[in-house]
Image 1 (cartoon, rainbow, N blue to C red):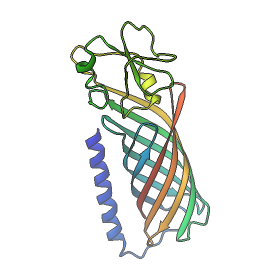
Image 2: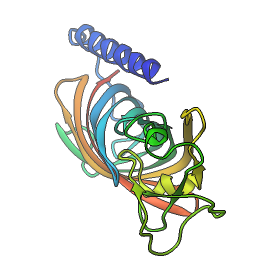
Image 3: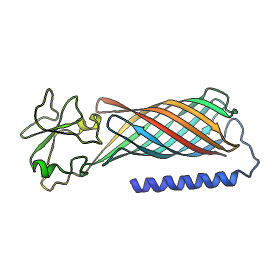
Image 4: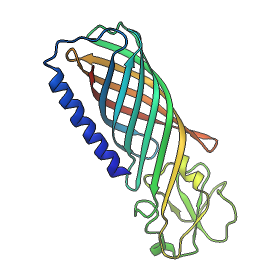
Length: 246
């Protein structure tokens, strides 16, 4: 899935750049409403556990000079052994009329965030068999991102202070760690993959800078709020996109 997403993003960039070059010679102009645009996005996403790169694509439809519908799909690198796919639909509210060269906007939307973790990665739990052996339990600790190592525990989460050895998977935040529950080191040392799909809300804004009649550039900052397992966590998305308006 990761390789497929990267290929789709690469194709998107090639198509947008090709259309932009070809369209630079045209004389048609789009009106203030009804125009559509495609774009490619790159940036950084930072959260409680790690910071990683983000690439994706956007599609926008200008309903009026003040209102734009936006859809976004992106791949997020969340550190060793972790990545995510993000799909969002929302509204961009222009704070100035769309005909200006620089138009600040507010953004609000919602969508789905799918996070995947390769627990076999050495930065996750891949080395646990060599350290503790089969039968050892990894128990999430309430209020901490790490897992306590113990045996014979029958619960799903440890509540209170813990004085034993603790494992901290560098690419997994407490939001996900506590939802894994108690795990036992497998006999063959193969943990497999774990995935979570959660609803997500976005709020933020940016500025659309018109470079030409068809080409635009958008720096953008948004808060991404994930909800799952009765908890929530917030990530920050810093991105820049290049779009072509038809």
